[in-house]
Image (cartoon, rainbow, N blue to C red; front, side, top):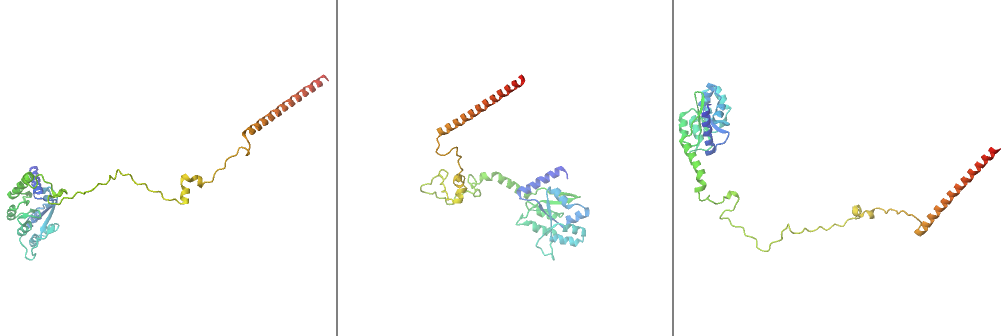
Length: 291
């Protein structure tokens, strides 16, 4: 597909998308002639539709078109059509209508393309009839090239009306000029206003001091397990006694001084005894030398 043609197809589908509320995947109705043509020329119909519309497509075929394919006895075309989704047309299959009449009845509902179908057909009479209906994309094949028809006059008129309505709707409509909508969750004009509460107001709950919870009475076990009550729970330690009961500190100091003096006397006595023994030994040695 050439770049110019692809760009124009993209613009056309943008118009159908915004002005006529088309949605992907696009529902595409096929007639019996385009299926037979694609089977004869080995044209990939699904890829061609996706490439032309430049988006995902859901091919569909009506029951009357399927009956026309059965009448052609082309097994390859019938197998190709069986892969597509079947669209109920509510026509009697024993007395089916022609494919062009069937597709026109399915597409046109109250003068509009209500179900937003894309129509792919080789029937020129059907294309001429659907050009009058606004918002019907028409596709056909010419020499193994899939082509989308440009916007019809009816579709262009609807597009211009929608764009102008979007542009000037909020300025010229007195209902929407400076008034709030109900959809925003605001009160309407006729709704009754809520009355204000009269009387003294209560204090601010954030500034009020919270009430203290009263402590619950504890059992003996719970009271003993608390860290503040360890003295009552544990047995008392014995105090170390440094002297006999009834003694005064002055008497104790006198006893200590007496014990020290006795120790010193004993040490002096031992020293004098050692000196006398040493003198006796020296005298004995001198007498032995004289002899």
